[in-house]
Length: 167
Figure 1 (cartoon, helix red, strand yellow):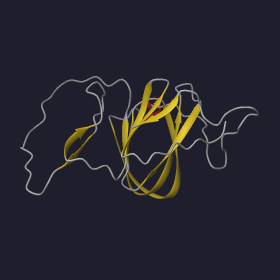
Figure 2 (cartoon, rainbow, N blue to C red; figure 1 turned 45 degrees about the vertical axis):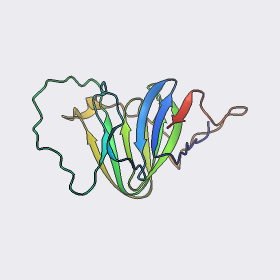
Figure 3 (tube, rainbow, N blue to C red; figure 1 turned 135 degrees about the horizontal axis):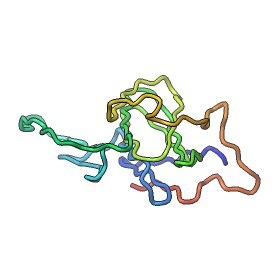
Figure 4 (tube, one colour; figure 1 turned 30 degrees about the vertical axis):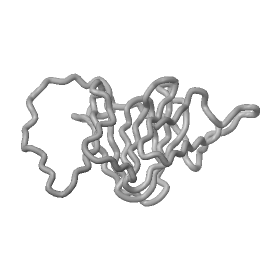
């Protein structure tokens, strides 16, 4: 299998495979007035964008103590500068495809596996649920890199069946 870079210039990208939502990417040029939430209420990590004019007031508030159960870590990455390739994998650690993120992009990693390779010097913020559980928090495996790219088997396609990018 070859490296499959899925490109989209759309401001909002849903990364899916076989009906499973792997990630949501909000590109730096997403512009919509008001409040736009991209995630469903069921996800343990919520992501939205607020765009308001000067003078708009968000009422002061406190968040109530509500017990929640988190069974799977989801993380958000905010690319402040540089460029990074995100490689997506199935739960069985099979490479699917990649997306390139650049300055101003945000991604919410929802399910499946993922790895990264920095393409330009990077400044990135990561937000995820805590507390961190150390070695039991994740299973590491060997993925693709520039020095270890995926290979294309004779007679196979570069696209994985069921991989989709929708907006």
